[in-house]
Length: 105
Image (cartoon, rainbow, N blue to C red; front, side, top):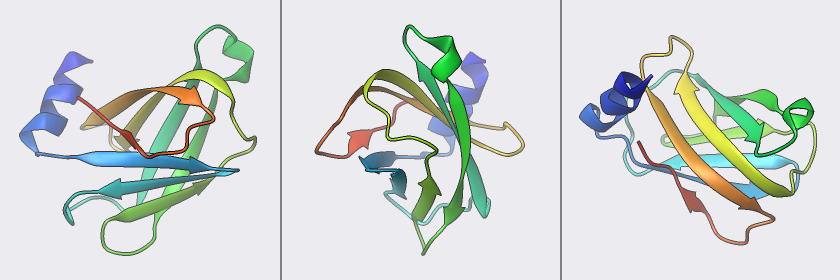
């Protein structure tokens, strides 16, 4: 699993996620060659029954948008990856958040 984060680093992927209501907006610093869709795995820190997965669709050159089934609050871990699972980015979220949150390797 660690190798997938290394692959993201090798691809020089830098992204941020902004959660606004029931939408997740993912932006990359550059127009990387990525899939049309990316997967976002939301993992609740203490309540596994609240975990969910959504698909973010490309919306412009370096942006992806996903509709969330709920407006998440509290502490979450987010993993963003391509459909082939060749790379992953992650973030620890404390929600609600006002600013975009940087994804790391």
